[in-house]
Length: 207
Image 1 (tube, rainbow, N blue to C red):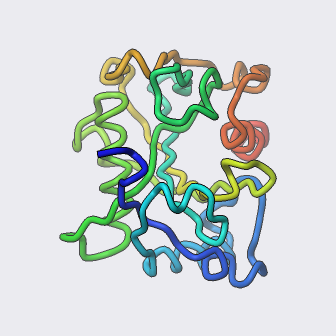
Image 2: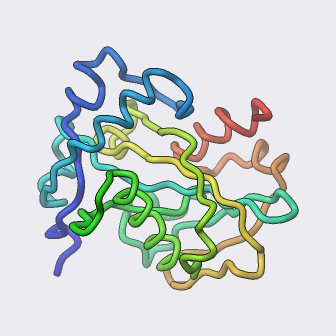
């Protein structure tokens, strides 16, 4: 099946942003009242064909985006290689492991849906199992309507503490990984937009 025929989870823009009243650019903590509203709207997700959604800014595609920190407080950084699916992001570095979300019919709550999808991506991309991701924490959302890719996506951002030895690039033709000291993140310029916004929103502020 083509990636464009994949059925993905989306939320109408007018719903998730309350008719633009709660629109934002950058990283927003789950502790903010507006963000809590955005989280509640996810339970009203729809499933749509990915190819139709890529050029339709009236919907926001839900993307899991998980930041990995190891026992030394280093952050996982990966570069998207040319074998990866999103050509617009090739050659850029990222601190978020994740991807599109699909419906989980057996899930009882929307939290199960987003966590199941995030866990699947972590297993596929960096080899983590369910036990490894048990302490995954939802910390907020990332959005960037100034960017062509960002206009049709919203990131559901998690943070996860892991053992460095449990992480590896499963598909070496699509990802190249390394661990970076948090101070190093602030000096690196070649990040995709979402990662740059999260670095400014979390690490630059020392949160």
